[in-house]
Image 1 (cartoon, rainbow, N blue to C red):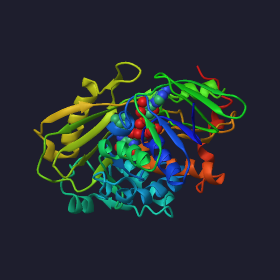
Image 2: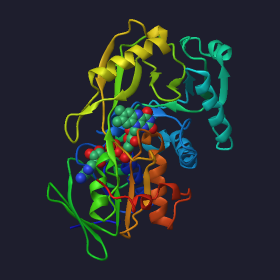
Image 3: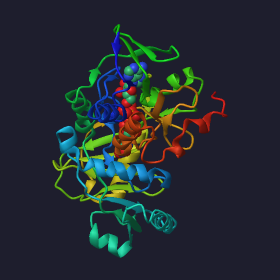
Image 4: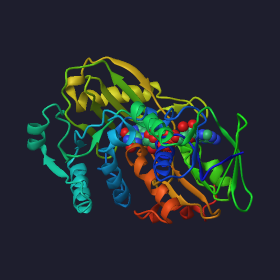
Length: 371
Ligand SMILES: Cc1cc2nc3c(=O)[nH]c(=O)nc-3n(C[C@H](O)[C@H](O)[C@H](O)COP(=O)(O)OP(=O)(O)OC[C@H]3O[C@@H](n4cnc5c(N)ncnc54)[C@H](O)[C@@H]3O)c2cc1C
């Protein structure tokens, strides 16, 4: 029987960052990952590290994450190709530009320093953007990073700080004996701990349900592709107001693009699908004309949990003391993940998170019956 202070289910960026911050705080931690740390959403996402466009309720936590991202080398030993390139959100219509202006006004005071650009200024500052954009909102300190490097590095750093990290170790049973959780894994580990962190991403709903608080979460599969290396053109990560595609260019020249939804092959694997890929390519040439004729060299997708209000669940279980949930990040958990791990650590070490998590309580679903 392995005795620790906290068992964490799920080695994505949320679980691994919780493991890292808890270990740094001197807590004994076991991080249990069914596959490999960072092999799901956290390692295959688009790599957008942006605050712009988030609901206002997420901005305090997102701002904390913003401060953590700049410390990656000290924290996890690599910079993860993180760069504060800026995030440019494009408007295709005047209505969309008004929506960007409204967001800039309502998010003032959260430190985003948004600059709303009319057509002429957009052309002058970002000449590689297509004529289809009538304006944009620019967040100078948002950016992007390489998820394949960053997310596994959180788990490795946690291990260096003393966490037990068990990969290929699916949790098969969880019980609470009145004092502690007892956790069993497929490969025969038995663990016990007073704290259990449910950081199981799109698969977290079954544990919540076991403790009587099912959530109406569904899985989504954003479609992604990457081009061959191209001359460096894009000096900002981009998105489009009202949805559509998003794109960034890495230092080696490859452009990473995403948009639309793919499909699940099975419970754990997803594919982008032909329709979504063709739609990304069609929109890409309109929005970024320099991409015309570029070769896409790889496509992929991942599996992420979405709740109906597109807000995550973060914080105490409403039914089981000692159980903390953190899941349902709706395609935007890579940026905020490290701050979530830090907030969960504060709950365990000091009784409460320094940033309010009220908006993300699982109790908002307690009265909703899950189909
Ligand atoms: C294609 C794509 C693009 C995205 N783009 C962005 C972006 O640009 N910016 C952004 O901020 N966010 C983005 N996201 C969202 C972001 O990747 C996720 O919100 C974030 O990675 C969620 O992290 P997580 O740790 O909660 O989940 P995950 O990374 O999914 O980790 C959960 C882990 O739990 C494990 N697990 C599940 N059940 C068990 C079990 N029983 N036992 C042991 N382990 C278990 C799984 O194997 C998995 O590794 C994107 C997501 C996808 C899929």
